[in-house]
Length: 465
Image 1 (tube, one colour):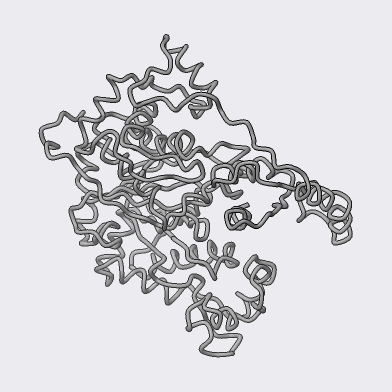
Image 2 (cartoon, rainbow, N blue to C red; image 1 turned 180 degrees about the horizontal axis):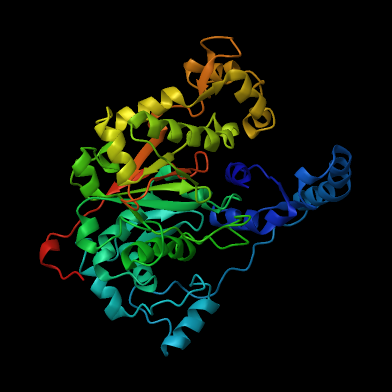
């Protein structure tokens, strides 16, 4: 549909052919992209599940008549919702707690859990924790193309059960959503990826975020409510709704915020993730990346750095072998180490995270023939014209670094991700346990994007619980 939108705006009539399960999403994308009533032809079922003969029959007998009818018949504009968008302080409903929740749930404004009624009084408490005007537009978010305002951040923060003092973090998260690099428009992709939020800076202690045992477990109010805010905001402002704009095949629940353990970092001498992302030590920063599944969790043991890193290398290799058909795309990969493992590694010859990343980059490799064999049925091999089964073809096309075509030896050892810069390290979790966590992005969807958290001028004087 996005291709049709470009053509239609240029005055070229088009019909978008989609599998039947995607008709509603295609029409929603068209309407939200400025082409309401876009012509859609539905292919029955899913094309990947049919033989060549079945595809030919369905196209000839089912799809082609729809295309002809759509191009020769009138364009019908879908009926829009009646009523103007309420102003910032308009009261949309009054009632008891239960009545408010029933009303919000009926309108699709809740995530299925009870919401805190966003009264004007509660919302204004949140606004005390920012110097930005309540009607300021942070960005325009796809697919709804609705403006994300400071006011809407506060409203959804209240609903998610956040405390007012979390407001600066919430604003930074919406700034990430509005950043083109993050590619928010893909948040409804069929793999059903979720956002992983990573927090750095003194604000972790100021607001009581958990960075110890069960760092990704729901329970602590800051980690849990801020994680919930992300998913609730996606539903209510950019309007990602399962079944239409959100086609996550399985989908999953939101992740709680992953806070890095700065005390552990100070003890071993490593810099926080925020510094790797280009910020100064001591800055309060949120980093968000897509997470396809909950990742790969593995035990890491040994009394030396290399014993630990050998186990991490093997885990990374196992993890990436399942994703090797994504090798031609940018990725954001996260390696989570506990303070216990990070301490052993740091004190035994790896004084910086960058040293660990470089070691792993040089070690986690496969023979070229293995990568090519695994990739034979992967999307890059089939979807990009001119890309043969030789990694050198991809490198010549600019899809891979030159490293991948420096030799034609099928036994040459090659990295299983494109660049050391695509791997990031976070230290968190149970300080008494020895488990590593590996999380990968959904290819270029939701690449790791960071924003500095802006605090109001009177931050130190404002009450915090």
